[in-house]
Image (tube, rainbow, N blue to C red; front, side, top):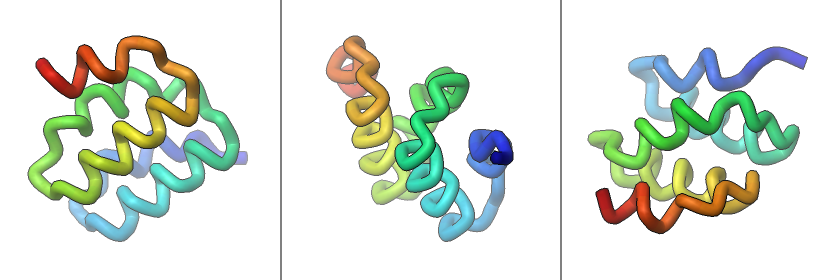
Length: 68
């Protein structure tokens, strides 16, 4: 299974959304640092999916990161 977090740097929004879905599906905890950064993505849907992914992965500081 590939490390889907590598695709989070794509300029293609659809690729980033797919990667987020796969990160959630395969519980790729190593993606957490990049997910935190994506909370401030220019694309609102990507930012929302990032927050969802953090919640799905059980990251407890998701709410604080969203407020930052």
